[in-house]
Image 1 (cartoon, rainbow, N blue to C red):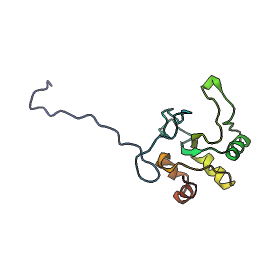
Image 2 (cartoon, rainbow, N blue to C red):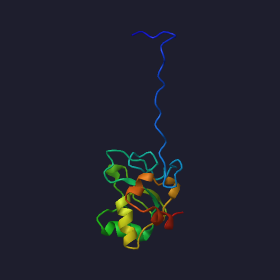
Image 3 (cartoon, rainbow, N blue to C red):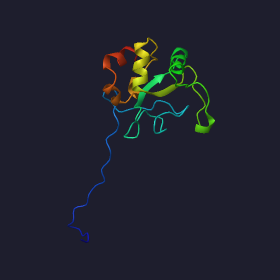
Image 4 (cartoon, helix red, strand yellow):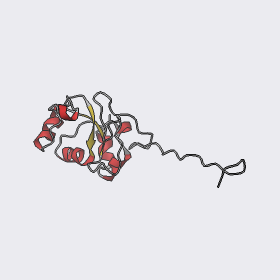
Length: 134
């Protein structure tokens, strides 16, 4: 059916902005190093993100050692993946389950709450995130 002046035009649907654990708009986590499952600097998630990389954390030396001891070496550069390796103080989108595992072991790094996706609340209790929030 051809369009004319009387045919209503559909406006494109804009996706709602992602929300953080505080209820606000999700802020970027880090662009140097570039983080996020989608490598967009934010802890966004989607159906392909099976690890739920939604916790924006400022990694510590203790956390990096803990993660490596659990088989996830985040310190060693992996140039084949464009990954320079993390240093203490870097911000990175962590798997919610890894952060929770670190918390239970007393090794959880600080969390940037405004840059942590609300999906983290499906794995981690809000009060635990708030206790580690910066």
